[in-house]
Image 1: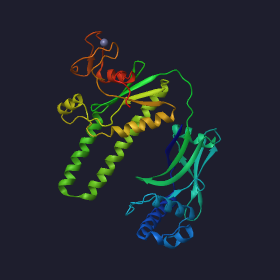
Image 2: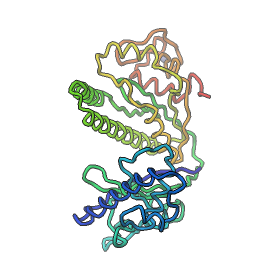
Image 3: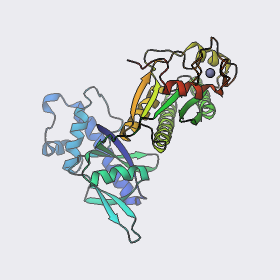
Image 4: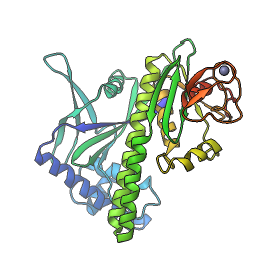
Length: 360
Ligand SMILES: [Zn+2]
């Protein structure tokens, strides 16, 4: 099974001179992109030599990759920002062993005057992938030099081959909801992500948005939107990472989630929505969250299945008794076997057992 992933490596404390160089490169690449798309198709430069006539000095490798990036977005009319990128021949990750046996990772790439080899910050889960790259078990794609806030990063794309080993089947169920963002359950153990704080932050964003709309400040509105978007994506990344780690630590072979395709929220959730006075996570990007979980699970050799979502919250996960109406409050109480369990954990267990069948 092949997976493409991007790892984001932060450049470790670049000097002021380096920061300025990176910024200048990024500005020149962006300028070049906008000059390039303004040309009609026939007169666009094809080679780096031709491209140099339309650009302030940039390494040939960067110009060639920029052309590739621009051509891959045929509908673009203007580039607010195009980051400098390097193909796999021009970008290298290097590993140096320090005296205490730890590894120091460096990124090496061409800049305006010379090639640099600069230290990068590597988290332990990223180290795993870089080691695969070193062992020849991952293929390197494009690397992109990106600024986020005050920091510079390299976004490195890797293609990894994941081998599936034979393990006894163990299924984890995941319930997604508007109040509990996510509940994962396996072998009687439960991982909860409450949505309270997230809903609170979202409300703050909404309030600010209303104020800015009233004031008619569109640039600030756009900025706020970008900020919220980054925050939401970051939360989804963190939650999916924790879910994948939880699954791995339990030796899970399969994750089952609800199939959200084509389904608006059920009556149950609509009812919660009406009652909850804005405490819930309406419009949270659950699709993105599921995508992230699936991606990280697959990388870990865990398969993902989708389950139809009817009745998962109305059925007892122990004896299969079906209730006609939802329990009040947060507890599922089975009328037959008297089992008591958190409603969402009960739902997650039902999803794990695929009580309403696998989705097509
Ligand atoms: Zn029961």
